[in-house]
Each structure stands twice: as structure tokens, then as C-alpha cells.
Image (tube, rainbow, N blue to C red):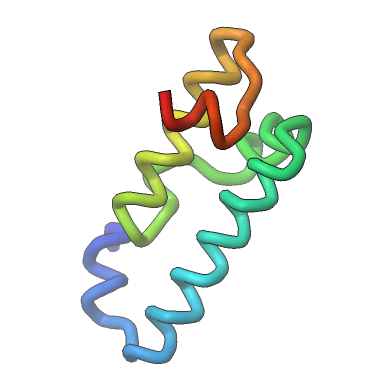
Amino acid sequence: MTARELLVRLDPRDRARTENAEEATLGSILLDGSVLPGVAKVITPDDFIHPKHGRVFGAMLTLHEHGSAVDPVTLID
């Protein structure tokens, strides 16, 4: 089952909890970019149920792979 299929099947309360968990994960990385390599060992952009969160995580990975800092300023650029 894909992440998108799972999202459609979730109860609205579970959708909110999932969104909060994904946002907390991304926010934690923004607060301390040094955790990104460890997080990347466990999850991929495709693991996010909300596509926008997967795109943000993918952008974070790209920044890290290019040796750039992962923070709100570099992520916006």
C-alpha cells in the first residue's frame, strides 16, 4: 500500500496525528540538522504520507548531500 492510499483510508483524527508527527520530524531536523543522517537511515521521502512533507524531506536530503546546512534559510532557497 502506498503512502497516498494509506492517507485516504485513515480516520480524520489519525490524519491529523500523522501530519503532526511528520511536521515534528521535519521541525526537529530544522532545529538540529546533524540528526538528518540518522533519520535518513530510517525513513525516505516516500515514507511520508503527506506529499508536501516528502518533498521537504527530499530537499533536506539534497542540501545535506551537497554539503549545505539544513536550516530554514537554505531550505527556502
